[in-house]
Length: 482
Ligand SMILES: Cc1ncc(COP(=O)(O)O)c(C=O)c1O
Image (tube, rainbow, N blue to C red):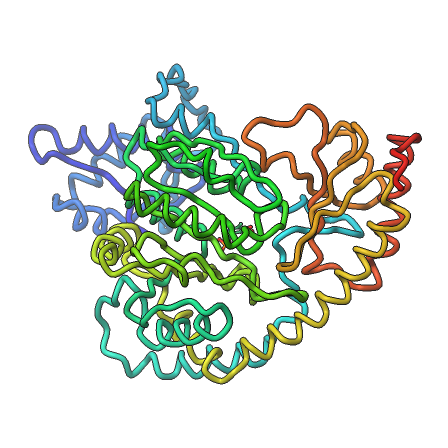
């Protein structure tokens, strides 16, 4: 490592070297006992005569900043007091920084470490097919050596775009050519990309209330005005949409967090509304690969006849959130601009992951893994529902949901969310509440979001026994349910 000194090559060079080394010692950049570069080397680096450096070192030795060991080298002296660091007064925060500071950016998963956790949105990492994945990564890594280096397409690598188009046509009936697919670093980057594309500062974005807080926080941070739109048993109440919205963020397959699907009538009404207003709908289809009966309704993207829908998917739920891989299906009129935004955001998603995932999918591992996970999810969900409809029903009302791997349960009794979470933690149970999903925090806890993607079937009963214990301590006289 070179010692960084900047000389202006005018005036007293020895004086400049002395001054800068002294400052470096005072600021702690050169630590006590550190060996100084040899004079010949430093002279060459700085483009000055060796003698200039030798003289500077001699002066610093004489002043006590350095000491020379004969036949060894020159070292920074020990025990020199550092100049106290002056802390500049905190600057006035620029408006954009103030906005980001004001945004509530919740980490939805529980803190971790508890014996039991109903972690929402968390897939079962223990059962991820690590062997098959490692093989795909190794094969791609070997092939990568042969590839000519050069920039990749911001929209993604074609084998993965093809595999995604095939996968979503098969599992969701989503219509999209491989060229309509844009690979992102997870769904969250897809939301970011669409927001940058469509929302200037002050633009209006409408979203479900309750709705996904990571999207709300991002829109707010970018300076958009987020208008909360109520949901009912049929999903987003379309007639209450603000006329000036340029973007509507929705989760029609499995409303986040409550769980109900958006009815077909509402889907049609939303599409008509967007076509009339020239607005864009961002359809977040984050976990609908897992279904438990009933007929899946067509995606908004499938029903769209006017090119108003951008469809968003992710591998975080079907595979692993740590892959940070998701995708958008973009209408052709919007793709050139979307491609440009992705290019300017991060050039492209890492190609190694893209090729490994394409291989993993084309070898059938993804569908196989979804099938296996589905069977496990179904068992856990049944057990959870049996308890929610049974001994837990005086406190909790399970909301109907036929997809994904979480269930929302409304609290029937007024309980403070902090007390509930804290008491559960004492009982070694980590809980997530519905409260962060609301635009305005509810006065008492709205309910629980019970993720069953990562909890073992055998852990569900003991975990719910603890929940029952906590609820009966906080609300000893629960509702009478008939
Ligand atoms: C509704 C919803 N959308 C999107 C995401 C984000 O997924 P990703 O990990 O791909 O960013 C989540 C994650 O929990 C989610 O719940």
